[in-house]
Image (spheres, rainbow, N blue to C red):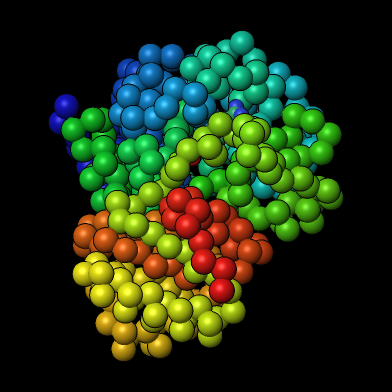
Length: 348
Ligand code: AMP
Ligand code: MG
């Protein structure tokens, strides 16, 4: 299939491009579009065969359910059987935005969307292109991240182009996504809200509005409640190690690991903070990618997946990543880094 990549204005989206995207969606085809978190691979959530194409294009395991994107409450009402009081609070405070709510589904939601679960995951994105596209199509849009399954999520149009070229008819490219990590998935079907996946809205932000918030922390023989959390995600091709601990010691150890990598004839890429970069030049890593200031996790989040992808593109055999404090958005960043590293973590 020939893929068209159209550049669209994120602030004043061109009407003819929105119309074109909406037509493909109504015809049961897939369109990649920007959201404030990452790029989504969208299909009509009410059409099981359109949703099947999403799984196929991504190579996504069938047991990993899809998040449905809506543009208003009426559209959400058609998909959700029961709105709990805590869900209402979330809608008031965090929609549109990077918070996905898990709630009991209506019969309108095909089984393929929820992978057979009784709950549906639903979100109203804040990106104007996403909102206009959903509104114009007049359909709820199932949209996982627009990457090949297992790879880092796409945060710029060229990431999508690389992964989805030849598989879908249209990519709407509006440049970089603001947040850079995926939405927080919050189960609000019960009394105490539970984070199933950390993301763009932090636990601290949720607690300020909702009070007690739990985190789904499955033990070794338990399945996570968000099925997707069991898969190795965001994985670059090279071996990856995450280093976490006090800043000075991490920098020292990074230098040591670069040298060890070179001694093993590895091409070594380093993903580090703005503060560490000047201290690492002298160790001559093959790629030194600055994620952002360690005190500005929003910056780190927005550069994270580009850094991981660049390591692949430049053929790094060994990737060393500097950790970040696990609070606020830092929790989601560390979750992605840990997965990318296949849980090879050095606590220093
Ligand atoms: P992605 O769209 O690739 O960012 O991943 C969506 C995440 O939401 C995955 O971890 C899914 O397992 C999770 N998810 C989607 N739908 C549900 C649901 N109905 N119940 C629990 N988790 C879900
Ligand atoms: Mg994904």
